[in-house]
Image (cartoon, rainbow, N blue to C red; front, side, top):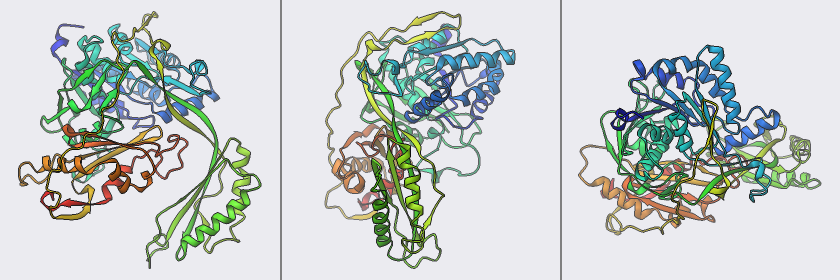
Length: 588
């Protein structure tokens, strides 16, 4: 680390928020960096999610040499020369289940391009071979979430590209910041700041206006949203921005949207540091620039989280169209008929989902229709294959009037079950394979701590309880972003930081106080009836102007097994915003 780096921020960009994100993003971020990489030191990508690990596990069942994100190889082949020209180093978790295989493939690519490239990789996360021994069951994949110090060591050793297995999403940003600034494992506040930076930019354009409930304030034209970057200072504070001239927006609200995304409680537990989310301060730093400061960190937890995926069995589904009058009676008869026909060889699980009822006196056939979906699961494909689809199709002329299917019968497909687990740190050996061919073991943190989430605190109401109110959508001035954490749904709500500049001073603060008082577990269950019988947790985040909601078990066994209409809970926040609540008139 040079002395100059101590005061110079680490400029860390993102070019992927998931496996399947915009293929051209790596080149776009490099081209936008300016001459000699001005504006960008490191380019990172997040390719892994719980579902992705299952997909990669299925890939390896077919071909053991796979198990990594193959789109990353194509991106590097297209952009490696440009990255080297601009001096930008690349860090990605695209190694998935096979970081060594990805590193070997990238070496082939670099050699074919005639570009000498120093490639390193980090592994040690794969616990599947020892799953039974560790009490993780019959796992297809079992990967501990590693931290960032292996990445940092690879960069310190001069790596041009670092690929990893299952590190935390934020670690691909934290690692470059550690290497750039020379932080140690006890630089808790600095590490926590970088974790927040990583969390903000890890999902790509979700930080620049994508999936943003305030999208009406965006241009909404065809210009692709720009990918984000973070300028991380030596003290862990940072600025979120994007390349000039790219689409989208970086604002306090777009950054808040990503901050409350899939965080669970008020403390973000990571392998390197525990981050206090209530300590974050956001300030406007100019057009498309938001400064994040004040983040407080503490020792990480004493155990490591493990992403476990198991093969759950086989599934199949069919969707029926019900049109016009008496749709409930039509649905009841079809269900009675089909379940009787399946009784001879019943699937282990049969799930029915009935969509919104049609509007009366509709002026189009589609508006007069609704959908009834049946999903079946069983360990055997033979049960949910032809016996299921034939039983449904044979009712075509023998059931309700207007019998129609939305698609032809399909073949069964495998599904997976996700569950989180935890192991002692001593069971995991993080290893970095350096460009010179040597390997090093990354020691664990010097200090660890157990952690328990504090009890929910109920704030006082912002206005008098008997104040006049209006019954309007919650989203009148409340934003939301939601997503999945395994079988749980996470919903962040916050009061928008922008609005009519002519409104009276202190209005937002009073709105925030009202929201914090409104959102309780019981209120969530009332507004979202599908959560009525589930455990709901609410965590106030007054510094961000909102709350975080955790709905336990809404998604069953996770996205790959869920039969919900929205299996990743991506739209639960928008559903909640559309619900009507009584808002004091003085806040409108």
